[in-house]
Image (cartoon, rainbow, N blue to C red; front, side, top):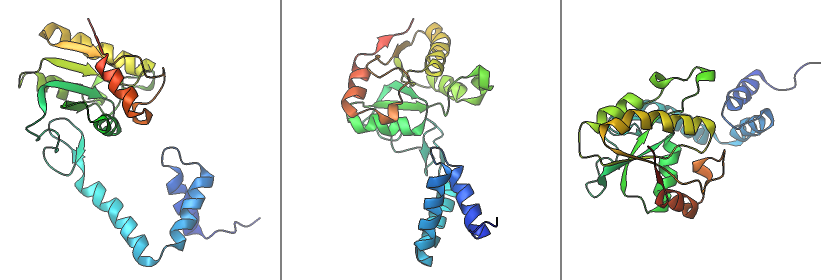
Length: 201
């Protein structure tokens, strides 16, 4: 039986289906939605994707995504530069910033350790974190990785590297559900998890 969809529409659907959390049905809906757009809207969408890919990169300090050399958080003189909150992804930075309670700096790992999947320390931004520790008056590292096996393994590994340096390493409290994702937690839960953090030794 012949496919009733035009080939470019099938290809567009397949591209959308590669996005995380997008199944084939949703991908097809998105493809049909694009077809309903006028030409200018479609071009604006395509240009926004291209522009983001070309201009957004990792902050040379904290590794968060930014269009600047140093992101606005790292360049903000009012932030507490003695505390660094270590997170898995840029989405987690946004989650903590929504609490409006944390005023320190961040470090984005862009992943978690998972030896079973071949993700070892050189695949995440651990060495960049260690390099920062020798540059300033860092007094505390808050490990705010997700409460999963990979998140705990990563937090433990980094703690073993930092503890000998005499810098306090703490772990956010377990008010978050086990296996939960920080980006979906509400502001109060995140703030309480941060406030009730425990020292890692």
